[in-house]
Image (cartoon, rainbow, N blue to C red):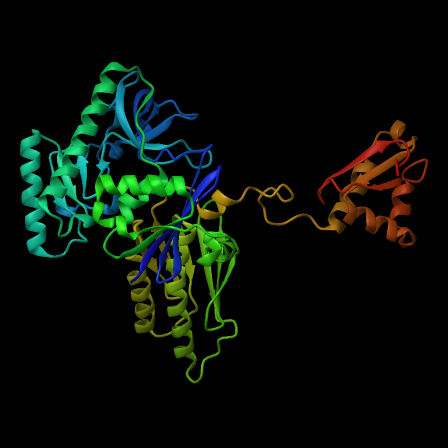
Length: 497
């Protein structure tokens, strides 16, 4: 698989797209006025402990208090690196772990989303290029994605040696450590240990709440986490960002410098790679499939619902075979859309009904295989005989639509507005409720153009006359383009136009 990173920068934001075989797989954005807090380490102060909820709130200096559950103190590592047998027992009582007024060093594992504060953990992890340093845990392990037994043994042996020399803490070898020389691994480990010593020094001197460690910029994080031998190139359109990328790689992994390219030509780099077009499609609810079918993605507050339709795809012979082919194609596209749109939480997939149980398993196997390419942890919870698949995907940040869009002022996020006939009835009811002294005055209805036009065009229909019959004088009508369809005002005096 050919993977590429495309980076574009402007004064307001930096955008990065990950391409897999020239197709947009993931999209990242960082805005100057709203920097990410995920991965940041703070010295916080426990503000409240809720034993009944098994959680605590911690003031870390953000707009809202962050929260942590009892298990957050020993939360699983990013990328789900630990084997089941390597995970220790967890305490269940939050009051046994923290108390009000206590100062505690914590790390943000999930940014504040909507009205919820950031989620934090006392289990700090510092990711490097080739390993993750766990200063509070005595553990050594290797990513499950490193499947070669000899290489796993080599890495574990090396990491155990580093831990002994360091006098404690733990290390997890990342996938990028595969085949690397010990000198590269040791340099990475020393950098992480030095960073943690600096964090502890600042924490011992500072007063809570305070920021102890800030995660690197978006581009540096992605280079650290994504760039490997399978990445064919990093394309950057800004000279300053290109310089930062070059300096970062020169410091952490000089072998990758040859993959960085500065694109300095007219036009937009995202247009060159077809990324902008793909992003526009990702903001729409309907996603067409090559066969002629489609999937419909509906993102709600509670869950994400994805429906599969055959559309124009009618197959050639067997009806069941046609449905299976459509569902398999949809399964691949669904997995890609989950990554591209960064959808998380509970996700319900409504595949087209399949009678044969083997076919349902076949579609599920395709879906599972595609989800394995996703860095975010996902888990299939259940599959019904009606084709419904329920899965969860770890949510760390806002979805693509919530990042790039804002709530529609017209419908307030509902996705629908009241029809003109409904608004007309509401107008009639409001006028009927007016006190008699107002009904005796000259009144003007100011409404959206769509509503005003209907009233003015239907003077002869009797509706406006019936409204005017409630008043001493005929009702004036004025169109106001600044009003939404659901808004209207009843004012005293004649129309101004």
